Length: 119
Length: 113
Image (cartoon, rainbow over all chains, first blue to last red; front, side, top):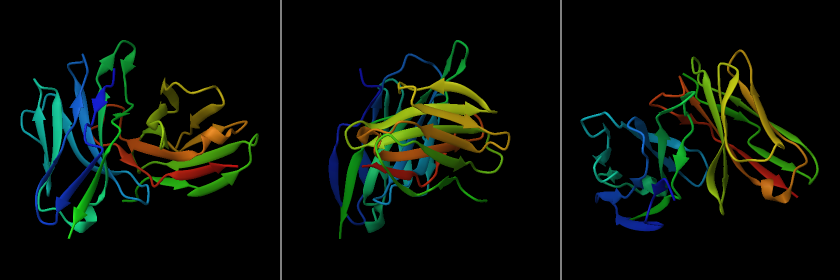
């Protein structure tokens, strides 16, 4: 079973509008972290935002916010006031919590959503 | 503060050769993870190092290996290259394995011909 599911392979949004990119996750750990990354065509993976499983408030970073619904296991990324430079692939990722023998540091990625911003 | 530096950026190798990729993490970060990105398989975890110890390894053949030095710089090596090893190799740097930030370098694009 997939641990991170991004159901939108591609999305279009009009410049200056808000857009929500979906992400659902599957874990039995109580402690975990959720990440969103942006990958432009250059290939670099740019860190956008982080939400810890115990964080009570939704994370925000400038125009990015994470709509964290723990019971639904959903961590949607909201981009407000879209800009042309936001056109890129967006990846949701999870770092699971401690397992016997030590914590797991690796990230598990979804397949990504390609966002295109129209002028 | 310098970001994560991966070298080289681009590489072309022939089947059967070996290759070494380098990753210098953000200053003060001691955790380095490696990922392979291909169009077919997406982003897959290779291995994770913390304080010179491999803590976790993904499901890749033994041809893929890595190490971390005392200054936290990491290298990964792929021996006996196959065409399917053509990919973007990304390295991520964290203060610790549980860190809330995982910052990536620009990647090394490896092409095997």
